[in-house]
Length: 242
Image (cartoon, rainbow, N blue to C red; front, side, top):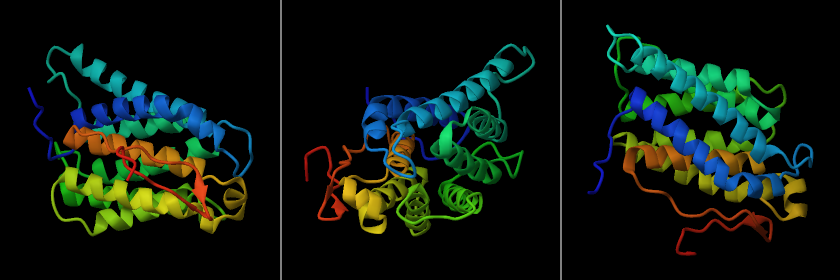
């Protein structure tokens, strides 16, 4: 039976997103490690992102478990509780520069999603605002932001989401497509990427996380993303190779 797309962001969506993002990063982990050339070519960006999201997912699961053992509770945390758990888990489990920036992105989202503790869900406009706050929070947390990195990809995702009208699935897909385009442009922004012939590793990881966000709401998995650069610009293709 086909699953019905979810049009809003609630605690269950936070849980699903964390799980799907962990799976996506698990699949892409070695690929991302292999293209890690900036700021240091230490080949651990994919691993660091995976471990950061693993910590976030574990914190969300703990929040659900705490409600399930409470006989008087609903068995499900509020959106605010789940979002805060996700952000806190990412923060305490953040590994490396990439994990720290992802934790800041999730913290920014949680600030919006948890702003009204009485809100059980967020809609498309709420997700747009959360993605904007995420990009701004991550950029503000870096002393000297560099274009052609995950910060550029996050900003492009927020910009694209800001122009999307519709439910959370529509907004998430717009953010993903904006991030993909920005990722493709990273070699033209950062010379070290162009010389290596790859896109930014942290940005590639964020695209995987946003693909999981699309899947959370639409139950559809976006196509593959290329990591090789061509003439200073990465080729980004769908699953059909187009």
